Image 1 (cartoon, helix red, strand yellow):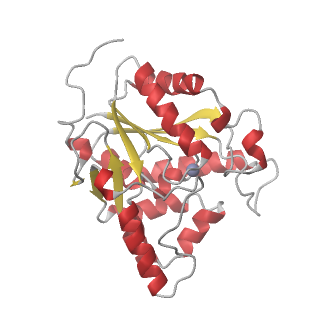
Image 2 (cartoon, helix red, strand yellow):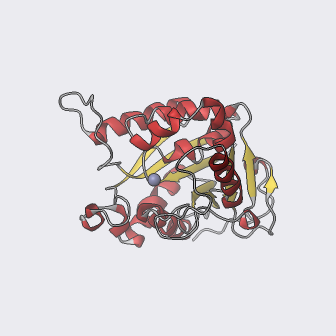
Length: 274
Ligand SMILES: [Zn+2]
């Protein structure tokens, strides 16, 4: 059994990205840890905020609720603020994640990896799927942490399968659904996700996909999550039923399988203390 640390930028990112992998890994007896780099402030302010309740406390509660559903053993926070999307005023606020010193952020994450004696860490691809400044920063931070950790963990990056998304968006547009552009570009102007040819793992979630939806639903204070939950429920497995990963160092070719049980390639065979 291993300890797998999933690093996410915002409380709700696990719900669309890695929740299915977390559910299965936890069920199979692995220790699953989630780290959120930001506290989710400023997120959408829910209408039903109780007196004394803040967006941060609400989103922390939502993250804990999601963890209870996925079987995640620990929810940890790196302590940065949310930078917002490119161009938002908070891009320039002190304490936001995208403005952090990468070595400082990497050190915070490495300390957590050391504390957990992590076997595996999962970060984001180079543009965090769609170029959100915090997602880009997460990529850099996780790479730094892998180098700084006392024991170098196995390293993977979650991303979206660009070719699959093109197919889905094309189909949705053909069905007359609005808001789906196959040529959609991310926050950074780049095509979203990663081409299938550059992926290494496709994890099919099977029935776990509906548990993933329950985990996502914990974050219902956020408008973009609410919109996903409003999609016809039968579309959810189609859109979120497979989770895609890059494992740098593996030979090219996407394998449909379960990387948790197949560490043979891409993992350092000996562990050298640093
Ligand atoms: Zn995010």
